[in-house]
Image 1 (cartoon, helix red, strand yellow):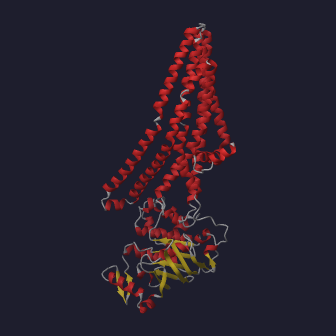
Image 2 (image 1 turned 90 degrees about the vertical axis):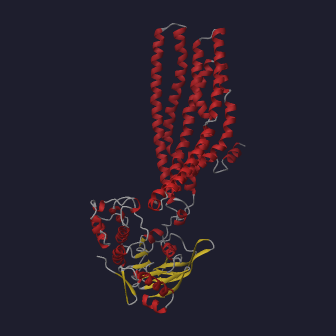
Image 3 (image 1 turned 135 degrees about the horizontal axis):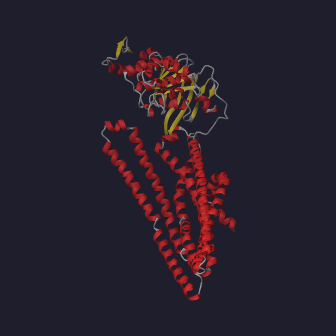
Length: 610
């Protein structure tokens, strides 16, 4: 029967008993030696508290009954020693509990971060980045909060209550019965508050995540905020989220502290009864005043741990919301499961072939339809076409950010789905339109290309990317800080840093996703020269918006609606007069008035900017 009850109690994995059990098994068990020492120190502190309450009775009797000054002095010395021991024990257990808590928080942060890295790009694209920040900070600390509540409740409050209850029972068994009258009504009221606390605590987490979201978007998009004078709308949005969180926090306070007045009133009533009964015994029956004062001291000292124990379920319900958030992240199945057990990709010539590839981000919304093309080894293959045609998706599939729904991507005769992602990505260098730089120095960001690269190799890559000169123009050179997302650098400078780290990687396969589309003509020319160096003798697949950047490509594929609609070299496609020719003529007309370009024999050529 007990087993069935226990199984029923643990049946709901999100219920409080199951979550507490999991915390104890997965996280507290590994720290059992430290917890045992903390328990022992808590027991010493609890015993000291009870013994101090017991000795008060002897002090009163020695002073007022026996008039024994030497006895009072001895008891005073013993009391001082007891409270010193209690102080040392309390300090020791608090220090041990803090260290255990810090270790658990650190371990949970590592586990959550490692789990996030096991998800694919789609998992992150469906969520706001601030959600992960909120989950990491809230979830990691919640486990420690729950365990501290449990350990403190058992080791500190329960031990203290048992010791003090023993003193009360020894001094006056009848009067100690008055101490328990506050428990039934208190437990009934607290039980009703638990459900509301769970709901409000979850809403508090959501409100905090919204505040982080608005703050992060405002800081990262400050240029847009300033350019479009969005200060007032962003302030209004932030104020609304703050007001919502404030309202939920006020609700939590009203519910959580509602038990206080009742507990105080019931406690006062019990103390009043104890005073009347104790006074009656001393005056009418001749009981010693020491018993009365010892009992009263024990009762007063027992009140706070008893109140904390009564509120334990309420406090646990609030803290367990964060534990659920923690386990939601840790338990989420990896959307990009580790596959290092698969064979490594072995490249010979880096020939890439798409064979009837099909893919959809969402069911029923096909993005790639029976796509087939070949990128020849050591050649430049360009993908052009209208926006939304699937060009960037092709690179996402080639990097296995997503897996194909049908068909296959073959590199040197090997299906990339059958090899490990790590081995594939290590042999690919990627440069996108929106360059992401990590917070740190220019040297650190170039060194991302290859771990352990020497200073000479970093400088050589920067020179090959035509970045060395502008880097050395900074007072700190390669130690210059790039700022968040590289905001300390110009667009063309960021792109050349990206090319430098791709050069340092020295990968046989190069992927370029409109790497110059967002640049002015001067920066574009500099980056284009760096890209030419990067692509030399490497298999290169480049997505181009500005067609003049790919007129010398060895093969151009026009992608529309997820399929290849035309292919050939630049001049061949112009002679066909198809889609490519229409795109090219349209850009030709747009650039006829641009002084940065010249038109020669139907070709757009960028002028050298001096």
